[in-house]
Amino acid sequence: RKEVLLTADGAAPATGTPALSGFWLQALQNHPAFEDLIQEYDAPVLEYLQDITTKLTDEKDSNVGFELTFHFATNPFFENTTLKKVYTTERTCIYRDEIDAKEVAADT
Image (cartoon, rainbow, N blue to C red; front, side, top):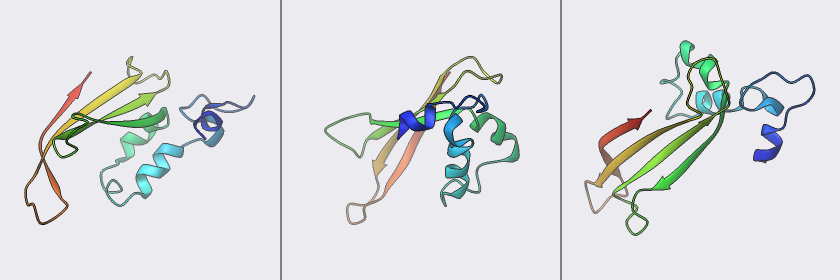
């Protein structure tokens, strides 16, 4: 599926997902957790988003944190092709399956 999204047609625009322009923008805007966070000025940048990957910070304990890596196509907004956010988390109640973010760090 990823290859299909990233494969450009001859007339496709130069975006992150040329086969389905605006895929990640639509996905994030339609997700209940993010719909209120995506602003109008985010839209042009998110057009260049190719993928979002996740990784646990500790493979043995999924409650201590994770990182999100945003993979971008070459774009006019910034030079990096990846942006990473690392979330340090903790389980606040052993009786509920919820975690709270203690710290959020971003690299550039």
